Image (cartoon, rainbow, N blue to C red; front, side):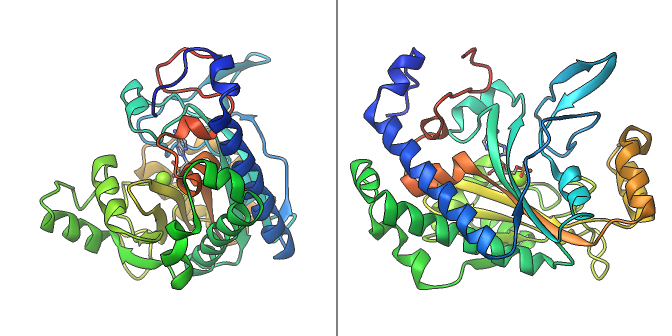
Length: 326
Ligand code: AMP
Ligand code: MG
């Protein structure tokens, strides 16, 4: 069942919608409990700003008129997460993002124009520290859904069997280079210098039986804030977390650039004008902590855990790219 109902009522009154939203509620509850118990403070996320994350591939940003200044709706609150580390060492948001994705992505079953990220940032952390927290979040979310929304999971045909492999070992890690080689062996075209494209990512995801990490993406595939590896120039100290069964990407994260000079050169390399980022650049000039963090798509995580055909089934108010909806 992947047809979007033609009215908001049709969607909201469907029992499957209610089951998915109960599961999502328990996922978010479990994530909040885990993060709070691990010393994280939840902050309320910013919604608008003079700039937003430039790193979202192919998606258009939404401008608003802010007292005569052009502001943006957040496509990601990454810059604000780094800023928040001036106050706390470990923070998270459950943050709304708006991205006008290309209309053709309405067919991927994993793109919305309005979605939420479980957005985590950790001062002084390495990429590996951040990956460990991302892995813990997924495990707690699965446990929360099975433990507290077992009836709703069963109603959607999803049982503990789907998570036996997840429970039985650590998430695998593969470098971008090895993932590309693997794709070439499968006869799937993929550039070694670029982000893994959606079809290829789905192929990798299909082969897996539990979530896994892809690390060390090439420079040029990501925004200026993913830290370049000093030991391997041209590679980034970053990662994606992919779900199994063809569900694809769940999260992206990295160690962050935080040194003023490095940030400025990375901005210029990625075609961004540092002057546009004045508040952030000035803050970095005066010093921001080293950090690592990531964002897990809340609807993507719900889709994977609940085993939903399409991502819009994981939201009360679906907005699909190119589709006019309330
Ligand atoms: P990104 O910074 O683009 O990697 O986004 C962070 C996470 O947000 C991704 O790993 C996805 O889980 C989620 N996400 C990104 N774009 C979308 C979208 N258009 N619809 C739903 N979830 C998304
Ligand atoms: Mg990503």
